[in-house]
Image (cartoon, rainbow over all chains, first blue to last red; front, top):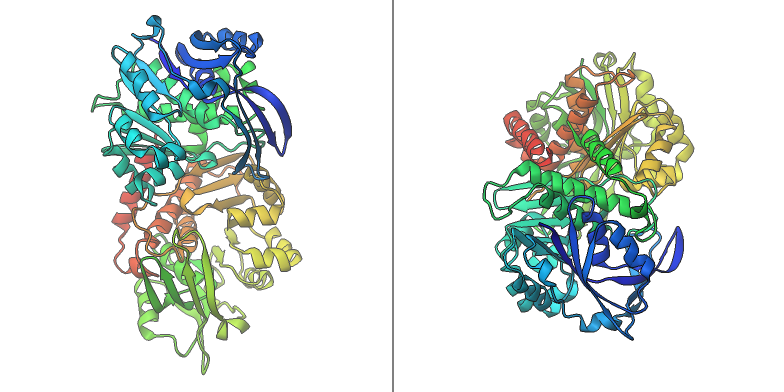
Amino acid sequence: MPIVVVGSVAYDGVETPYGKVDRMLGGACTYIALAASYFHPVQIVGVVGDDFDTADSDFLASRGIDLEGLERVPGGKTFFWQGVYSPDMNDRTTLVTDLNVFANFQPKLPESYKNAEYLLLGNIQPALQRSVREQMNRTRFTGGDTMNYWINDFREELLRTLKGWDFLLINDSEARLLSGETNLKRAARKILDMGPNTLVIKRGEYGAMLFREDQYFIVPGYLLEEVFDPTGAGDCFAGGFVGALAACGFDLKDSNVDRKELARAVIYGSVMGSFCCEKFGVERFRTLTRAEIDARYKEFQSFTDF
Amino acid sequence: MPIVVVGSVAYDGVETPYGKVDRMLGGACTYIALAASYFHPVQIVGVVGDDFDTADSDFLASRGIDLEGLERVPGGKTFFWQGVYSPDMNDRTTLVTDLNVFANFQPKLPESYKNAEYLLLGNIQPALQRSVREQMNRTRFTGGDTMNYWINDFREELLRTLKGWDFLLINDSEARLLSGETNLKRAARKILDMGPNTLVIKRGEYGAMLFREDQYFIVPGYLLEEVFDPTGAGDCFAGGFVGALAACGFDLKDSNVDRKELARAVIYGSVMGSFCCEKFGVERFRTLTRAEIDARYKEFQSFTDF
């Protein structure tokens, strides 16, 4: 049973200290789907304009990603984002956000998706995230991402959505904003009270943390020598995490969830996020192999084991 | 064979979001010695004025710390530092630095210290650090800490000192400044070329990393729910790290150093740093037991294992 991934499919213009690309395939849904595709079948739901390049859909299809739910709006243009990173790449400034066809995105699941067991919702309006869940017949687990904008300006909507989720996957500043707590351990406890039984907090170069009611797991970030472009790294983390869980047929609702399997999924998320940064945009996924992924997983074991 | 610890013994005035203490026992040498004393015998070298409270020297002695090298200057006053932490405690502002007797600190080793095998040099002038090493007959390992001021204004002195060290223990911003590299993996390689065979980079709440020529180890930070006062946490890390190495009779010069023992020393350093933050100043060490230390070590295993 595949993973349904919902979110933005976009073109990005990105400048980092290592170079500049005016227009390349991007979007949360794209990154999540590519990363997850190394672990489990993926079906995507998104919207693009008729400027969306066949070479790009061919690339996604070449990774086995089901594109039936990728809507093409005739005469429309694909979501375009442009940004520039700070010299240390810990901050970025958005220069252009042209929502285009994404402004009216109403995710509709093809019939062939409705029996999927895993649902990963990229960062979109919380009510839309809920509408997708309602279109599915059943899920083993449902969860996703959100961002500061929804936490601040759509808080009630978001809280309603979170009640139906098994996991939430956000970064540390979002966790602080959502919980009102600076301390991440206290923040996690408050967020777990909002609905999700599993919380993953991404900390960028510092790694990630997973919390459940009675346990937690922390992994440091992978030490890359060159970060060419961090765009999409958090989404690739999400794709690797959910892909790894789905691949072992996981049910997050089970209170006897295997702690080790959860931890391994966090490692696979970290591995996918680290590979994403090694080239601009989605380029790394044109050559990346499962053998490279498993080798880096082993590297994580070797530099964290004691 | 004991560990000789050299550095400041001071009184601190500290304000954090959790409270304010006008004057309490502090100084790098104090924190290092207290932390190390849980693992191995410690001999300290420092200087205080005749305002140094007997209750404070009694406390250090009660932890088995040898105070023969703690010089008392008649009519002098003990080093006093006062600072205030930012609300998130990631920054601090120094309000007062009265060096007092510490301004003329010329570390002199008692005869009974000269055969010690382990030497840990707190953050003092690099030439003074070198002079201590020269007073010792032999060491299994020598190393210590430094800071931005010495890296910027005493660079040549510092580089000469580092040539004779087996390990250097600094924070991430110091590693970047010393190496001129933003990327910590590249920074580590450059620093290992300066002399030390072992580099530990402390990352505060994000944990720590250990580098040697052919291997590295990374551990995330311990998740405290309340950080009352981070003063001395980095020094306690150093004390725990060196204490744990000395306790197993380690020789860092050996190229076949046990990777697991090194990693365990980093964990013990992290454990001691985390306990330090739980109360103001050195207060936590009045009640801390070795059993609590070993329990937290196990906790590190449980939240990092996969």
